[in-house]
Each structure stands twice: as C-alpha cells, then as structure tokens.
Image 1 (spheres, rainbow, N blue to C red):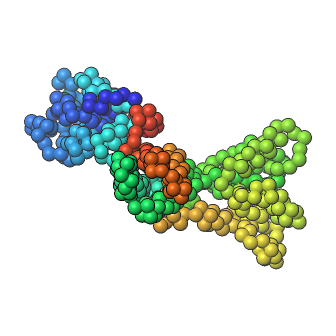
Image 2 (spheres, helix red, strand yellow):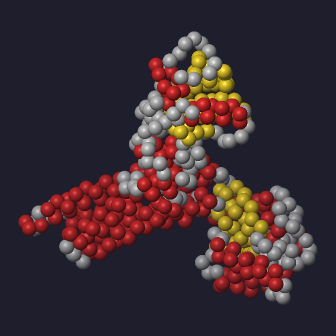
Image 3 (cartoon, rainbow, N blue to C red):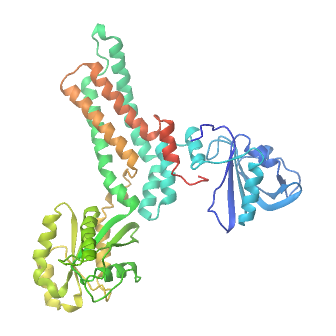
Length: 461
C-alpha cells in the first residue's frame, strides 16, 4: 500500500458504466484549489476556496475553454468531511465519456488515482473512525439482507468499538499500576488491588466469551445461512427448492438420480439470507457419476448450518429409521424433518404423524402448500434474538481471531493470579491482551494489516 497520504486522490464514487449521474470524489489538502481551476459557476465568478463548507455549486467543468459537462460541485472542508481532509464531490452526467474526461483532466493536473479503500483509510488515519468502524463500511456496502445491514450499521455506529475500548481502557489502567509495581520491585509495594484486578479479569473474560460466541450468528447473518436439502431420490428436493425460490432453478423429473451435483441459490426470508443447496438423492447406486454427487451431498451436510431432511409421504413407514440414521451420523447438526407430497395423506394420517413427531413439517412442494410454515420455522431457527435486542454481534473473522487471542492471554493472566506468580511474569500476558484488543480498533496496527484490510474495499470508498 502506498504510504503517502498527504497528496490529492481521485476516484469514481458511483458504479462504473452508464447512468443518470456519476459522482467523482477528490480528497486532499489541495483538492478544492485544483477543482477551482477548472470550475466556472453559472452565477458569476465564484472562488471555491472561499465558499462555506457543506455547500453545493452549479456550474461547468471547463478544459481549455471547452465545456466538458454541467455539474454540481459539493464542498467539504477539513476536518468536517468523510476523510477529515478537504473533499470535493463532482456530480456529473453519467456518460462514460464524461466520467473519463473529468477523471483524466484532474489526473493530468497533479491528482492521482485512489487505491482501493483509500478514502476510508484516510478517514481512519485522520481519526474520523476507528479500524472496526472502517471495516464495517465495506460490510455495509456488501450487505444484501436486512440482518447483515443491521449488523454492519451497529458496528459502524461504534457499539462494538465502544465495548472493546472500554475493556481495554480498564485493563490499561491496571496495567499501568502493575508496571509501577515493577519499578518499585525492591520496595515490595502493591499498587494494583488484586481483588479488584481479579474481578476485572473475570469481567473481561465473560465479555470476550460472549462476543466470541456471537460470531456463530454474526457470520451466518453476514454471509447467509447455509441450508442443505437432503433425502432419497425423487422425494421432491428440487421441487422444494423451486417452490422456495419461486422459479424453475433445478431440473425436476420422475427419473431417479436427476440431480447429480449440488444446485445452490440464495433467498432472503424475513430479512435473513439463506443459501439453499439442493443435493443429489441419497441411495446405493452403481452409477459412478451419481456416487460422486452423493458424496458431495454428505460434504454439504457437513458445511450446512441447517439440514432440511425430506421424505416422500408414500414411504412414511421407513420414516423413523431414516430420521435416526441421519441424526446418529450428524448428532450436532440442526435437522428439520419435512414430509413432502402431503396430498397423498389423509387428515387423520397427518394428525397422527404430528402427534408422533415434534417439529414435523408436512407440505406439498408441487402444490406450494405448507411452504409458509417452513419459512416461518426457518425464521424462528435463525435465532435473531441478539439482533432484535440490539446486542453486539461479531461478524468479522479478523475480530473473531483477535478476540480469541485476547481471551487466551486473559486466561493466562487469570492462571497467574490464581497461582500467585510474580508480577513481572503475568504482566507479559496483560500486555498481550492489550495488544490483541488494540488490533481490533486500530490502536495497534501495521502497514501490512492496513494493506490487507483496505485492499478488499472498492475503489472510490
């Protein structure tokens, strides 16, 4: 990553291609002065350097007396801008030609193309947001469901950061007292109250465990809950996928073994994204290609957060054996039992089955009856309680790793206190915990870390 952050950068802030309008963003100390050279107001002579911040001005971008476009120029003066620097946003017509003409005009006059995420990187470096909030910007842009959007917004507002910074500050206060004890080691004095310190370590440990546990929910809300649809051939797995998606995504046939490879698609239900995987039917077969598909079925069950185990209503005599077989094979998996082809069952048979098996769903994928009951059950199983209660949810794998490292260090501190080891030994673990907590919010950074994080951003953000 380029280490020079005091020059002027430019990028297209809207999607590339033709549109009604395009927004070109410029940031840097000289951004307003540079744009002022090529801007002519429609309402008399105007010096952009002298206008108020957060104002918009109508005029033309002109190069060598040739008008490139009529534009709106928005002025944001430091430090009250996204990056904390002088920022100019030029709203022009969405012609690709116009976009490129304006970009090239400024690049030829001392402005350089921004790197991926460089505007947000500058916002971080200038103290406009911490590192976890900066990462939430990328998550917000890529969010494709209400749940992933809410998690990203919560992180960008700083709820997670505040919690981590509060823990780190409390630990830092005690660490300072411990370091003071080391300075007066020969006097054998104790500045840090061990009972109070022990309570703090216990509190930090509990908070870290809660945040780490939240990652299981946060990760699937961010990336979509993987759901495998499994069962014997011809039970209606592909028909169910098509009914859920409301389109003919998977091939449906009365011939057994039609689905030989996993078919995957995403659906948003009640604000949560689900990645449904239609798998090959499970049976014994001599067909080499079909066997490969069946092997992939078991691989997809391993990766799935939830398994929809589908049965044919005409074969319910083998229901208990098949349920037990899959549950014994995957005891830790959440498996939802579904009987398809409900039209083959009488009302008495349906009542009997529901009394025998709790949480059983009976539907007809072909006739699209009972689908609502399935989607309502999926919503309940999504466990959105923490999201509804506005609790802090960790969705970033880098944060998850840092939290785990911090917890390991805190556990070592606790062991040191319990075993009454010398202050200089457990102070090392205290410093490690502080380091890993600082990694999350950006109090501790490296050039490589910042490069890896912001390289995943889009250009212009």
